Image 1: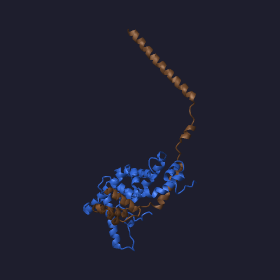
Image 2 (image 1 turned 45 degrees about the horizontal axis):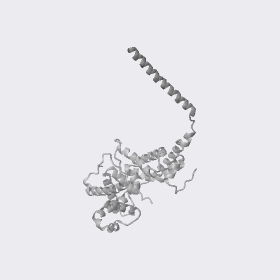
Image 3 (image 1 turned 45 degrees about the vertical axis):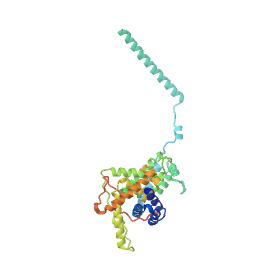
Image 4 (image 1 turned 120 degrees about the vertical axis):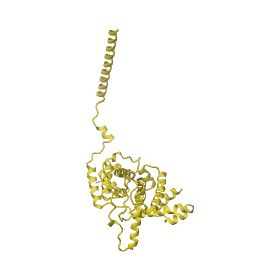
Length: 122
Length: 210
């Protein structure tokens, strides 16, 4: 519950909500634990102020980023991949068939050679 | 040049930026201050903060094709890149603890009560020292919450945790910070974590962004 209350206080503080004392008063049952944490949150917020980069740095980096962004090659989309030259379907089927025949012939040759060797040994 | 509506969501711009440099420029304009501020508070040095901010945006640009809108909001994705770069920076053993920023960046307003200003600067330095002694993960959370004012859901995405875990971590962090402040001057100001910390003891006096 305390975690919830602290988190809620910080969020409402950013939104310009109730001050620490008013907020804590609403949750009287948690006052002892909540009050120092809420006061600390207010202090942290006042101390950690956002920092801005130097204007020259910001401008110079922007220019370099845009130059790099314009120079980069866009990643190929699915559509553009489809436009790339593809091997013809018949060529692929023919290559697969030849590969299968070579494999089958090799297996046949090995089996035959082994059976000859076995016969000779017998 | 393409014109982009100011109301165009980051995620739409990120999709456009995959092929359109100008869209990436708009994303840069929207996020550079927050990323720089986040990095600055993590490394505590202007030069290093500029270097890491630059790396964050170049890395974002080169990995933009891998960004998926469904996985995280663009800002959380960007903070994650920055977080990883800062973590690597801290892991690099050759890094030295950053030198506190120049005192000229503190409040020096002649129209304000000098004693009050001095006390405020001192209290701020004390708080930053206490934050710098917290574990790096807790410093990370404080920066995302108090500097970047991210909602818990955004912090959860950036840190790869659940929203409930972030609330619990925030509570534990505040309790630990309170304890560190109570210890006060007993410590000598050395950072507890071996990798060094980023929260600068003296920070610039910059007005909160509207």
